[in-house]
Length: 352
Image 1 (spheres, rainbow, N blue to C red):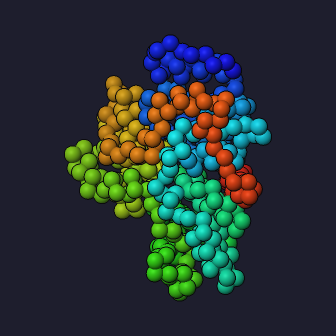
Image 2: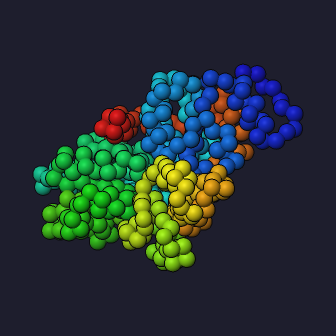
Image 3: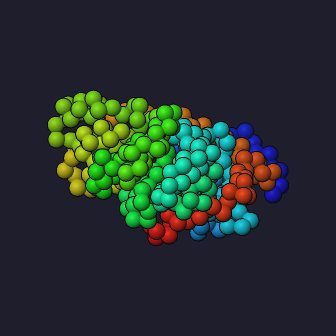
């Protein structure tokens, strides 16, 4: 492409012009938690599962992922030969993903399986490619909040026990929905090294001590109670990354796609005047504005993800301007590709 210099104009206009110039050679993906300034330029919007499903069918040479780093890594695993994946800000990480290091996961799995037990690791998509590779080598799979129930059912049938990581809340909430007894679930304490205790040996579900700081710290039981008190009869629905105590007090819990669908259903049925939604605020605000004349959408907390916020329209523009030079391209370690991809593809095949 040529190095045409654009006349001074808005960031949005520059992005639109570059998208037009690249045409079918460019696709921009964006997670629901991105800001409106970014989402307005995205070609495919979705949660982690929806975006993962869409990547294999993308034919564009350039895939720009507006989200956090683990999402771009997953896109690299599923992209076709010759395709390039870009991330507007490589510092857009995930606090939860950082709570599980690959070397620690491998050490724990080696200890747990040393007695001959078949431990199936099930890793939330909010994890590094290196962790996904460890999980793949141990015969495990990836899951998302959309398919956690299906994947946990699969994993429980595959072995003697499941190691669910890194989100203890999603693991516990999913296990409760499946009827896994509380006395068969154990939260690992890596600092005190409780891997050899009797309760760990008897457990069906071993939970890694990680969480999403946004959903766990900012979504509180007292907030749910206050909403029910001030809006009698109105529902509170939350993301399953919230604590089990919060989920238990709510009227429903599910993935980002579930929350959007519940809002759409409430609007279509017209029987509710208000609905409280507990998840990342960019999405909630978008729903509030979209349905403002139909239903009162109330955020449980105005919680935004600082890592998602790292991607801005200005950084997206800079990435598009530097596509030919490879600005913002994401590369994954070759040795990790095969086992990490195996864990991710296993999820897609099971949930096909």
